[in-house]
Length: 264
Image 1 (cartoon, rainbow, N blue to C red):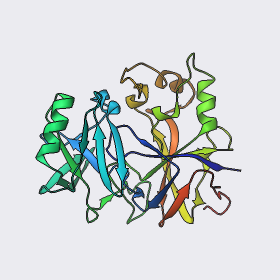
Image 2 (cartoon, rainbow, N blue to C red):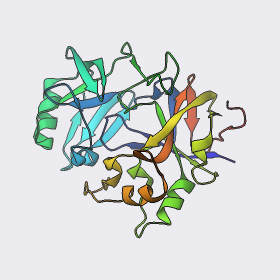
Image 3 (tube, rainbow, N blue to C red):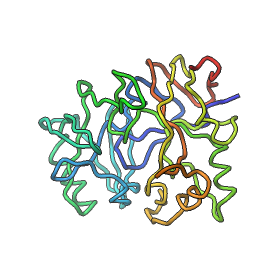
Image 4 (cartoon, helix red, strand yellow):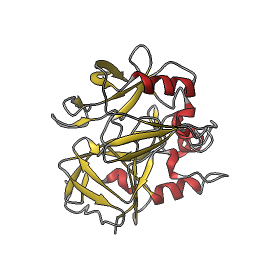
């Protein structure tokens, strides 16, 4: 029986996530997930792909208020966004965001060693998902492509059985981790129901170099991509995890059962 093993939220794109016991979920994904993002002077997103040290920045989200902690332990309480509108780019998408504050920019710039701005996606901004894999009206925050990423403990176990050194699930930055299924069974689901919400499958998740970054040290290696390429390779990508789109709002929690039978 598929059950929720863990729930993970990533308030700031590229920074360390938060482990949750439960979360509100809506059409855009988990509440607060990737609603903040760092951009360069050109307005383009910054992630662990180019700056692995982002994983060392801790995040906390309480009652919608974000706080950050730098690798050296210094903290910053992020104010309600008070700057003006700003056009930002995530991959090929350009959308409207709100600049948070110059004070936060200066703090982040000092700790990262490069000029950045922190932006927030307001409710009125709608960034559509890829029409190739979703339906009209589906939208997402600052995540790469889709609202919710699901992976299973058995898929990780299968991968780790092939590695010299096992890796933790945080290499893959999923939102929902599922137990009680066969390895990579999540790839085959057309959808599922959880917490009163129907989740529709979008596509498998093609993995990038972020998975090779140790989320505790920011050290970059070659695994798991090298091993995944040996048995999870198709076309130009290697796959681990599956993307889903919520079709409503509800609350999910660790221990809940997924109803895959009613999907379709």
